[in-house]
Each structure stands twice: as structure tokens, then as C-alpha cells.
Image 1 (cartoon, rainbow, N blue to C red):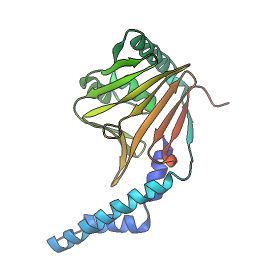
Image 2: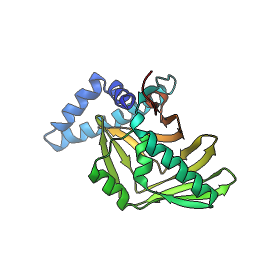
Image 3: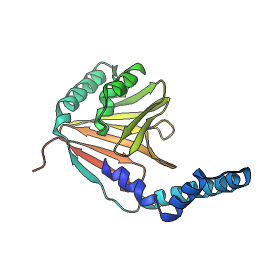
Length: 211
């Protein structure tokens, strides 16, 4: 997921780095107030840069054949849930499709939240949701943040399924003052396409070795 980290690094301009350094060294109320104003402006500037990043696409491609077996099992479980009108999938099974390398402790935290509920609403579609304690997963120089509630819609495809997250209840990737939201994941037997806020942060995971 270097595309996400690279995207954050592109926002870390000299002025941003300078203000962050000054903010951390503020020693009195006046300085702190001024730095807070600067941080608000930086957040606005970062949001503008993030919006502008959607004008260009630089999707990263990674090769992770080790995920193939788990992904195939996941697709089978979602298909079964759809056929039965609904079902439950462990959150850590979905998290693997984001390419995150989960530690045993992180898997434990995700399992503690309970399963993701899939509910069929149409012949090939439905909704999904999961609620619990917030979880932060460090990954490649940034954090994946799972909020108290994640939810959205899913749709079955010829070779898998896709998830479309509710913008108000989605996973985010963050680094310092910057944050980008996960918009959707398209999962198939050959690859996983992860769409983040701003095209510069999108990435694809190939479930095979690089040719």
C-alpha cells in the first residue's frame, strides 16, 4: 500500500512540516493559539490538495499470492450468505482484503468487535454493517482506522463481490493531520481493487505472482 503512504508524503510540503514542528514546540498560550489557527489552515489546505489529487490516477499494483486462499474462502462465504438471505463474516477476514498484515493481537481486536452482518436486499445485492470499539492498525507508515461503525452496500459479481462504504461509516487511512477515506473494494478470484478518496491513493492487489 505504498500508494497511500506516497500520497501522504506528497502532501507533506515544507510549509506543512514547518508548521507541524513549530506547533509541537509552542510554549505559551499565545503561541499555541496561533499554531492552532495554522493547523486549521493546514487541514483546509490538505483537504484541497486531496480533492485535487482525484484529477490524476496513479494506482499502485501489488502482488500478494499468499492472500489467494483466504480470499477464495471469503468469496464463498459471501456467496453462501447471499443465497441464504444473509449471514455473518468475521471482520478480520474482510480486513485481509485491504492488504494489511495483521498481527495476532490485531486479529483478536477485530474478532472482539463481532462479525460483519450481511443482509440480502435484492437478487444480487444487499447491505453490510459492523459495530464495536474503534481499532487502529499500523501499516506501512500510516494507520488504518476502523470506526465504531462501518456500513454500506454490497453487490455480487460474476467472479466475487464488491463493497461500497457509507461515507459516514467507513475505514480511513491516516498519517499526522492527513486522512483519506476508503470508498469501496472490488474482490474477485484474480485481484482486489481498493478505491480510496482521491485517485492517487487507489491500489490493486494481484492474487498471483508477478509475471
